Image 1 (cartoon, rainbow, N blue to C red):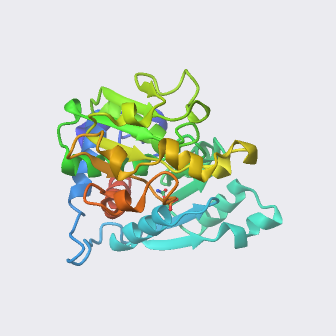
Image 2 (spheres, protein in one colour):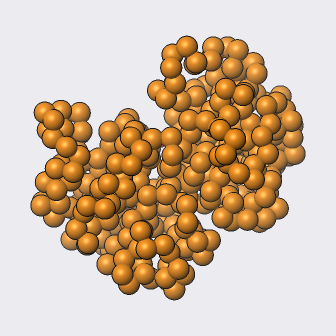
Length: 323
Ligand code: CP
């Protein structure tokens, strides 16, 4: 394990100073974040080549527990673990004994008794991941696959890896995060990671109703006009409207939203000519982004997905190597 990890806060480290859990990017030192990105580079392959494989997780069992829907995060954690040689269990929570009233912790203790070493958890409730991390055996790790509106650390890492491939000088970047910032764990993790890597020009662009409270996203410029918000930036990060976290009356009309905040090719021309366009997906085409832009030459949206597997391999390998 790299020496930088010895400066990590004790709630996510082992007694030997190595990274044990990854629940958030808050408090993760820059050296540790960069070290995870460097490790992930080893697993990046062009799609025309076979994927990277090692046996570094042989004998390790990883369990995926998702209580919210997922395509990319769940599949990429599973592929990452398998490509490192781990055994993988995917618990279909909706079909599990949770529906008979079994608690999350009893579910965890049951899987732990089956030799699960790493829990990958997505949960809609704030605090569940911390509860699990505080109650598992010392050799067991917990990785967040998304916690409510708060945190999506591996998405933040894969976003940084993707930006780094195109725009390596973070200190000089202008980044606009556009859309439903208020309900977005992706935006929160991106903001933390960008700040950690030295980005000073971070703009959050949203209608007033979708802006976060004033005490959040410190250091970001708040802009309500998308044209002004993306003017001259290097990176445009679009977000989905999180209908599942809104009262139905608050969900904006799709057509109105696209006309005010949708990223069309004409609007993208306000950013730098070589700006990259990102989106964590799932995308609502024609609501927050046009297909012309999503599938266009400035889009790195599919690269983000590929980098997600590499980042999750790096995170799994790092937390297991420190045991
Ligand atoms: N970006 C992301 O978290 O996608 P999924 O919800 O499909 O995992």
